[in-house]
Image (cartoon, rainbow, N blue to C red; front, side, top):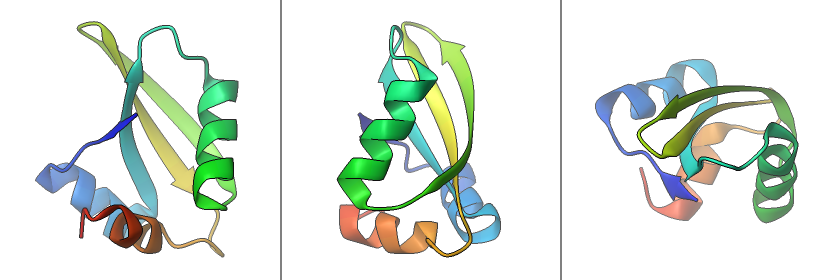
Length: 78
């Protein structure tokens, strides 16, 4: 798991409460959801996945009661 730190990913954190994380290509949505929920103690509302060059980029929208900016701060993105 590797957080994306591009301008777009920071904008998604602030505007849409969405984290952008890279995973290995074989990772399934269910395991991504479980891993994020357990690691950061948050609830996931929706996951969108984009496969690109041997990696899977997951756009993970958190529920409103769990601000993505708090997770980003813990990890050191913001």
